[in-house]
Image: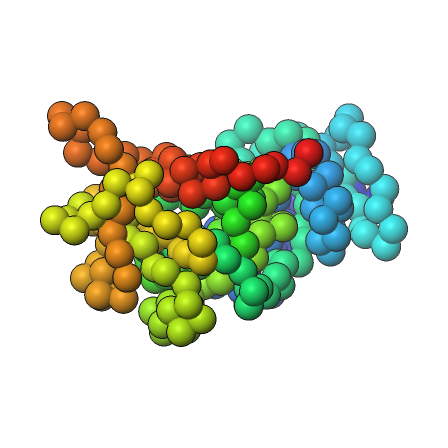
Length: 253
């Protein structure tokens, strides 16, 4: 195991860039993660781990052909993408999970900038058996450290596509209903919608869904709530709709 002690070490500089730049992650096809639990999930789902770093005094798993590095605690605190490092950090290849053509349920996010919300939606979508998540412009990077952590490993499993509006037109051509989670005179109660082949579009709390996306959608749904409440957190709204869409189905144990 190689020991690193300097912030100027090329590995440290590379990891810092992976942590802070979505463009750099895309350019190199790698992301950086913190914690033994995420490492366990990455290995479980066949993600290619490219490097493993551990704080001094922390047991680090040995993975075949994966270089390991030992860091003093202060250097781990400097380079880790998390405010409170867990002593284990690793880099891995960004998954290349293609969107399934035969999928029947999807989530579409537009302008959801909080990485915690994006990660939470991925986690819930995986739990509810959704086939994938489309990210339209303005969304946080699903492979940024905060989003991956909030996804609790779902980012390693669930197909995620950074999409444009034409991709939704393609879904419509495949017979997929595109529901906008938005208020309007024609909005139906979320409990009344037909959930067979569908995609649910969720926007940011501040801006909602764009007019461009609303024109693509084939229907609108709303979550009933007290009149004093105007909106819900994007991840919470997505979770409620996803649960309602699969309510009553038989779950595999």
